[in-house]
View: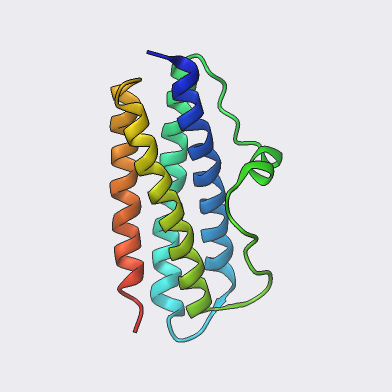
Length: 146
């Protein structure tokens, strides 16, 4: 197993998941509109699952002898996401923003799954589970669209 190659796949995912959890919680707190209640509840579920996956990714890095870096400054510097709108945000905007971010993480995770196939199957399996969970949340959120 190539430790550096695995780290190159897992560390960026840790950043993405950490930021996604923060954004989902921010949206959860500040959303307004007729979809507030169902999205409020769904965003709590997304946040909980994403935090759990981030923890698993970080623990995999450390298991491989690589330090996991989920510090605020690391996440802010390396996130692929645009800034989430400040203040109260309409439910439709929240839905679009979260779906956009989920799509990005899902696409990048699928690419990482491919790269990990010849490097580390255990890490690959972890990412397969993460992608499946993200895809389920994406489906459930997209179903809220009229």
